[in-house]
Length: 287
Image (cartoon, rainbow, N blue to C red; front, side, top):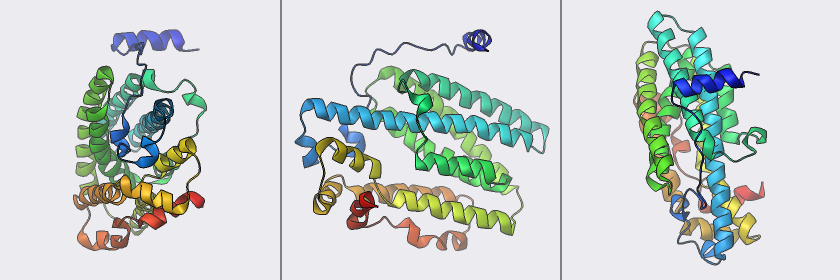
């Protein structure tokens, strides 16, 4: 219904859709530490590519849902703004989130509109829907946007597509501003017991999801290579350096939280900043 007007708007902002000609997976095995995994090495080239397409599409779908949720978030925060400058900032941030979505859209899988968000994205949407201002500043702008800086940087660095690298370069500039604004706004927001409880519960849920390790990569590999025994999964996770990779992610989260939370609050979560054992990570596929 709005297609003609939207296309005119996109043209005015130089955001018209590009045609993508890529004929290979957008990321190679090194993004998931698969290059030294025996189950991956034993796959034919056709099945290796099939796996990489599947994993790459999964990353792009998460990006699709995250940028879409970013637009929802800005709408909410605009309505809850307490000053003219806040309202203006969130109006610009909404425009940037919409631009990110449209810049990435040419690489989305064809059926992206019918695909369910991942469990991680579902938790983020719940935070946006239910969180108060203070919770949203911390969990979305400080944590998610801060995480997004290192996450998108790795996607940019390891992308095989030069056009996609350029898109991530643009996105990274915006993410940095969004994150910085979250730190400023959070520090001017009063603490409440309700807010503290919401933040604590949300962080516990998010950290538990990170601690489980490269669940989706292992699941996709097993789906492509055939069923694995528990010991084979453990060996595969060891070859992927799953605990080191997960430890680095948890350390990054702790560093982001340390910008605004005192050590007493963070210590309440201390056990959740340790990755699961390889055995626990491998067993997660059976639950």
